[in-house]
Figure 1 (cartoon, rainbow, N blue to C red):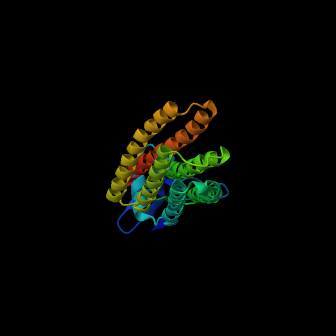
Figure 2: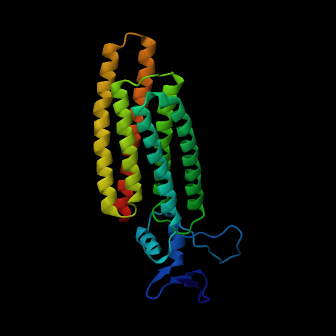
Length: 266
């Protein structure tokens, strides 16, 4: 691909490939291209701001097909999803061995910090990349929701450590296992990008797991209120159970975002 001007001013600027031509004037009007801050008159930088595009989505898809895309995005997303998987595995080990709660809280703090770093790298890459593999708002949304899952898993275990929980109740341990499974399914779904069918298959599994989590959440609350007589203990366990449920719901939010990306760009 090359950019050229035939000397006729802005209207003459075109982007050409072997058989295709796309008007830069149209691209500028649509918000795909913008004038660089420090360049002289008539010099335009090719800058994809697809998130704000409203008038010519076909042009955006054309650009994505002819312009080499930065594959680092997929590597960063898989790294971030790896943190989700790692957090889920740590939580599952904790559910199997209550004595690991303090150590798991520290481990998840490290995982959460790494996830934050990867999220920042993704957003920085997005701001400095010409053509992104999918819409900018989708990149931001997916990165934010993956990071949120890690944050919520870390918060659940941190609450258990803060409340000095020595033994997880059976429903709470089962919820932790379900959340651990959902985290692995999230990582599988992200690893399937950009293929549409495998992503949709993986997100279906996430939604099935989330439904199991919902049923167990209400069961855990019912058992808590029926068997516990100490109000302070009720408050502690309700906090932990609710946090686990929120984290399970967050995995479904990731599934919805992935489905939107897959269907839009598949």
